[in-house]
Image 1 (cartoon, protein in one colour):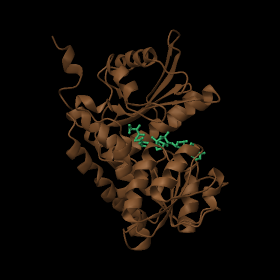
Image 2 (cartoon, rainbow, N blue to C red):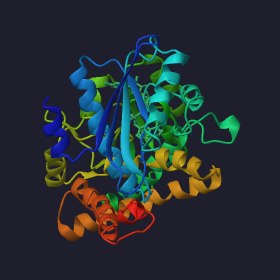
Image 3 (cartoon, protein in one colour):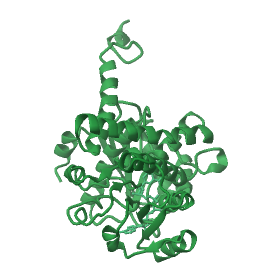
Image 4 (spheres, helix red, strand yellow):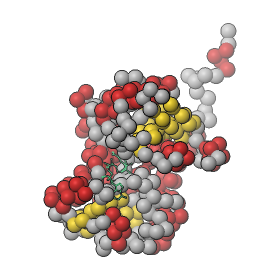
Length: 365
Ligand SMILES: NC(=O)C1=CN([C@@H]2O[C@H](COP(=O)(O)OP(=O)(O)OC[C@H]3O[C@@H](n4cnc5c(N)ncnc54)[C@H](O)[C@@H]3O)[C@@H](O)[C@H]2O)C=CC1
Ligand SMILES: O=C(O)CCC(=O)C(=O)O
C-alpha cells in the first residue's frame, strides 16, 4: 500500500506506529479528522494476516469514526487503533499501559475506548497512564461496557428503518436474521425477543448460538447460510464487509440494520442495495450508541443522559432517509452528506479570526 497517497486520498491527518518489545505491543493509531474535536474511537485487537491488513483496517475504521461522530452530533473527530495480536493469548496489562503512554504523548488529539478484542479492564490499565480513555469499568461511575447501549441504539434504529420500509416501526412478528451473537447482538436479541420478533441466528462460536436458541427460541443456521434465509431484516453484527459481490444477490431481506462497522465492502454495494429496493441503515449512524455512551464520560458520566441521547439514533436515521428521498441517493451517500455538512459548517466558521488561538499577535513584544 502506498501510505501517503492513501492518506491524501481520504485526507487523513496522522498515523502513529507504537512498538514496545517488553510487552509485545504493536499498535497503529490512525487519526482521520479533528475538525469537530479530538478524535474518539475504540481500540481493536485482532490477529491480522499482515501488517498491510492491519494498517488498512485502522485507516478505514478511523475514517468511519469521523463520520459516525459527526452524524451522531458529537463534537468529536475520528480516530481508531488496532493492536496486532490474539486477544485470547497475547494480552497483558503492561501492553495496555505502554499503549496508554503512547496515547498520552498525543496530548488529547486521540481518545480511546473498547472495540472488538478489548474490554473495560484493558481501558482501566490504559487509564493508569493517560486521562484520554473512556469506557472504564462502571465501578468508578463511568460508562462501563458499551455493548448493551450500542444494542439499544441498534434496536431504536431498526425500528426507524422498519417504519420507513414497512410503514410501521413494530418488529412484532418480523423475522430478523442476526449474524454474530456477540456482546452487542445478544443484548439486541433480548430487545427483539421481548417485542415478539422471530430470530434466526448464526455464529462461529457454537456456545453463543446455543444460548440464543435456549433463551430466545431462535432458529440456528450455519455461518454461510445466513445470507440465504427468508427474513425481513438482516442484522450484520459480526465483522465488516459482509455486504459484498458474493452475498448481495443472496439476501432476501427488505431491511439491513446491524451493529458491524464497515458493513459495505465498497460504496458501490450501497448503490446496488438501493437499486434492489433494500433499505440499508448506514452502519455508522445506527451503531453510534456505544460512542455516544462513552463520550458522555468526557463531561462527567450520567447514565440517564447517555441513554436519552442514544435514542436520538431514531431521529438521525429519519434524517438520513429524508436526505436519501430528497436527493434520490442511496442511504450510505445520504449519511455521508449529513456528516459532511456538519464538518463543513465547522470549517466555514473557522474562517473567522479567533484571538484565543496561536496567531501573529502572540509574537508581539
Ligand atoms: N461493542 C460495541 O459497543 C460496538 C460494536 N460495534 C461493532 O459491532 C460488531 C460486534 O461487536 P461486539 O458484539 O462488541 O463484538 P463481539 O466480538 O462480542 O461479537 C462478534 C461475534 O461475531 C462472531 N463472528 C465472527 N466472525 C463470524 C462469522 N464469520 N460468522 C458469524 N459470526 C461471526 C464472533 O464469534 C462473536 O460472537 C463489531 O463489528 C464491532 O466493531 C460497533 C459499535 C460499537
Ligand atoms: O463504542 C465504543 O466503545 C467506542 C466507539 C467505537 O470505537 C465505535 O463506535 O466503533
